[in-house]
Length: 491
Image (cartoon, rainbow, N blue to C red; front, top):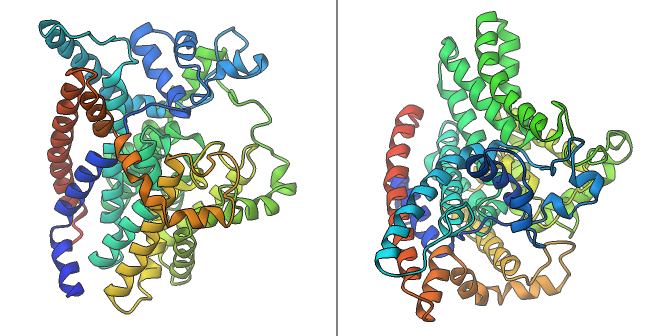
């Protein structure tokens, strides 16, 4: 029975992904630009509305505890040497969010015409109102969903469709990905999943003897750097192939795409600081001496600590790493690259002044390693004899993780600090009671709540736009997925 079920779902894998991401968005996807993402958002909001990179109005408007903007920092870090407020975050997410900001501006303008006719209060159209939060959240979620589907397509090159499917969903629902996809959808980690998965999908499928393909890979590699600077390590396989083949025309084509895109970050730094080379978090954010002194103990803390330890919070990752090691020993090239990049990520993350990632779910800075973790998890699942055991394994760890996210979203476990044992384990068995809270704080649920509370018909209109957006996203996801499937030709 289970074998037949797996075959049925894999024959319509794209439809399955489409429906899961559509219906889960209806119930779970939140609509908010909160915490670190607001500083990412400040880049596009300031450029689009103010035509500058002076973040004073953005930071003062949203300077609340949960946004942690630079205005709350010590003065020597809050302001740059040319007197502008600092922005400690990269510009990459803002570039990806720009189309959604433009759509939000147009939609808010049109809705305000309707609200004027209906004599409803019009919405401020300066980048802070509902549709900006919603479309940036949904847009980033959409990119993340495409990235997860790309992970699945990459896995089908090495594993059966059933294992690829289970492994992809195992990482999507059993790791920190679930939290950052639904609970904190404007996280740069979600954008990272998309751009890194796209890079590897094209790297594996494009012909390497065509200059335009290397140019495209260079552009996408530059975007990987722009989204999160430390992610430059993810382009190592492309760099290795270029060095090995030693084809000058290919190196030039890649560089022609990579360097101009990367330069956008240096230009942005120059605009706010007067310097092209700049460490916005301060010189002590990265501890160079930590490579010799702090790395070994920090490895243990990052992986096993109750304070956001990767294995402690999301144990499925431990099995994924084991599978990645096994595949590397079996000389699977992509697994070897994945293991190397995961080790480099561990070294980098262990030498930051804030090794736990601040207010976060699990060790959030490993979320961008999702492709390689999915490969490792697929390798681990191959050791199971039947699909029943594989499905049971993924289901158990996914449910456990979702329950922990429900606790986290309801502030029953600390975003800062340690999981308190055994309390957090006991609370896992009642965490399902927080599901109404989670759904009620989704984009759809929160507006429906306000409408039912008699706050106005405008909230019902908001929900109508939300459902319409999800339906349009469903159609676009399916069409893009179909084209990507043809390109990947997973068979």
